[in-house]
Image (cartoon, rainbow, N blue to C red):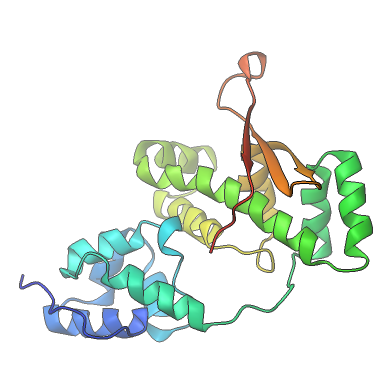
Length: 229
């Protein structure tokens, strides 16, 4: 297959996929099979119904690039630009049930202080929640690189491999406004034991759960101030 011509200007991910599928005489169904996602996933990307996933939180761009012979960074560059052009709703946080569940995972005194501060301005609380979710997503992202573990998880949950893979991809692209209780129960709670905040420094401390048995469970903290762009 002839490699794609160098990308002269950034376009939407959907436009780039549509153009390259036509050039290579491939179908969206064939692309979906190569990426191991349902056909609807690819169709929604092409039509613009689905926001392009964050490049650092997915493996679909690498798979699409290999299958379509695109430039190594073409899809990631287009996705980054497209996401940047779509302004998120300012200070949009999770719904009340999700927010309560995440605060229940926080040190009680810190959670109470965050709620007190949120009565004046919710931006700080939403920022910390986003950073906590970022930590969980970074941990879950590794599952995509371990198909055996993913198949085992699918079997354990009584579902198909591709369905489980799609659930992982959906969670990895979740944001506070789109986060569901299923996301919290299936992905955040199994990964995070407790989180806390140092209000003086703004440092977030997250204690991850290990995959050991309860008797061997050794908790390891992740401390950081940064956040996803």
